[in-house]
Image (cartoon, rainbow, N blue to C red; front, side, top):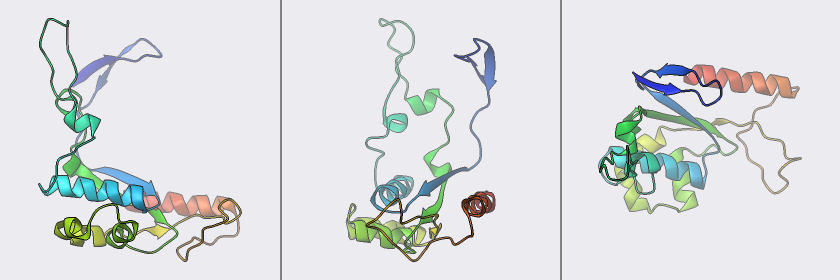
Length: 163
């Protein structure tokens, strides 16, 4: 267990190490989300490195400058492993994550092939969507309810079911 000082209260507190699965819920399964998910799955399968990930590739300097202690951030801070991440989310389109990744064309199809099955298993839940706020977008995978509170309750149920 690490001990740190809370920056607001100035009091020391203990931080338990990360353990178990970490759910990552994403609003939308388009280019950014499908790339994130595919990237994590490719790293976990050994097909890629986590290039661009501060927590996975960057180091932190400890102590004085003349003391050469530079551990990786992931080894210094108790973070969940990339293997512990579990993805879910909402989208107004009902394409699974593999279909979304192909449509967005951020990662080439042949690079997605080793993780295709995993990506196909990630299917978006119907999204809360109001065309009044986004004029040029519409899709079939949208929650229907009488009011915003009911929509919010549907989202809360999605989150509980995901857990």
